[in-house]
Image (cartoon, rainbow over all chains, first blue to last red; front, side, top):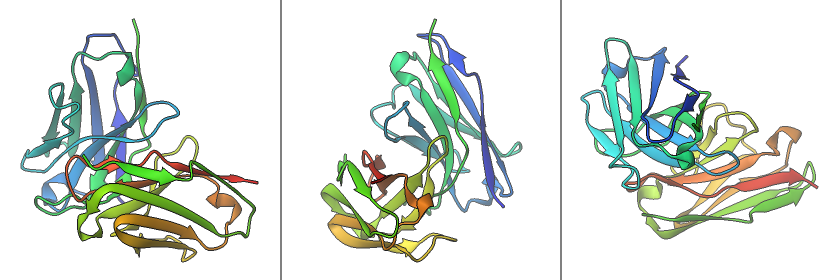
Length: 123
Length: 108
């Protein structure tokens, strides 16, 4: 059974960099069957797609965040990562990692999700 | 970006009733690349429907997805107590992937 688990600091200061890790178990990122995705959800609001990465390191980002986002992968640890620079209070949210079943260049539905990790941006 | 507009914002129904949720896209969603998710308080979203009408693994057959082009629907034939939740549609036909703002199905 595939499981995803987010981890990282729950509190980040304004203007600093938010860094999160998603650890995948029960599946191998390097299998190349899926893309690996980050989504966020501000408290009481809807879902925002941040971006995704393939095992090769190929990425797709939401243009609204592209200048501040980096998604990377470490296949040896079966983990992928999110970095969001120059954060402000509006970046406070629950951050989810998820598996995207889209093949090659196609996007797909998100069939497995982590439980989410809450991040607050405050000094 | 493809904007998804869900309606109604809130649906107040009783257990056993039928629920119909709508998701309208600002432009055509290619290849029926539309999914529906259920989210309960404090939990991650759960995939219900993909490809507009295919049920995900383990999803009861009271959940039915339909539609194409710009208009999509999620129907819950008979509401069970556990179905009162928030539902989101998502398009994945073009980047960036986008979600609707959600429909809350609440107990009347």
